[in-house]
Amino acid sequence: MIKSLAICMWVVLGIGIAVNAQTHDLCTPYCPPYGWSKINATAEFKDSIISQEILIEDFEDLLHKYGATFSGEENSTFLASFEELLRRQTLLHQSFASLLGNRTHWNYTEPKEQISFLQAYGEILAREKLLYASFYDLLDATWCRPDFIESEGRCPDISTHIEFLYSYEDLLSRQEKLLRHYYWLVDELNPDVPDEDIVDFVSFFEDLLRLHSSALEKLEALIKKDCTASHTAFIYSRN
Image 1 (cartoon, rainbow, N blue to C red):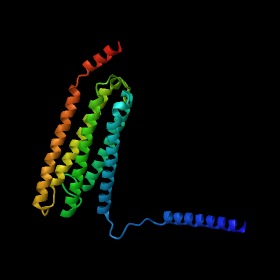
Image 2 (image 1 turned 135 degrees about the vertical axis):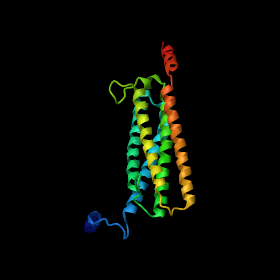
Image 3 (image 1 turned 30 degrees about the vertical axis):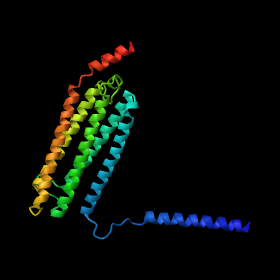
Image 4 (image 1 turned 60 degrees about the horizontal axis):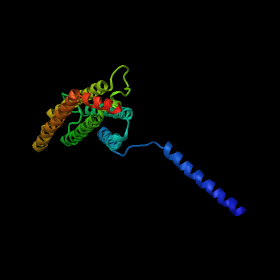
């Protein structure tokens, strides 16, 4: 009996020590390492944005995997959520770009810093372009399904097609502004940035412009897409 009580006391004491240790950790100031600066904060903000991008890509993969089994209403809901995630991500990209600089100057003047941050910004834009292409593919796959066309959107008295066309066009417009910001940063690079890096940045800018042009072509394809034949076939099969 005494032995059992002793064991219980040690368990309780051990739990108390653990709780006290955790509380102490929570109450201790969370201090950055020596030398940690705004540059480190910007770099970690960039890493967080890319991590979020990867999670959105995971969500996108699930939509591609299971989208064919969803109803039109479910597809409409998930695609609206995907669009909202893309829109939120674009706002984060704008914030990151503004941390780097603007059309007249960089906020970080060292060549090494400019090269690292501009490479990261380019990676972010390229990832975003791929997500937009995937967004189009998901829309295109369900665009002419009658239950998608007739699904209830988020905008009262606005058809699902018009709602997605409007939001997709706005996303591409925001992307254009991000590309413009990339141009400003390349244009304002420190003269000491090596020529080979400048060549890489100009070449990458061209690649981004081609991806943007492709996205605009996909928007045009959705605008032109005629679902009349698909809808007629659906009505005939029901009759």
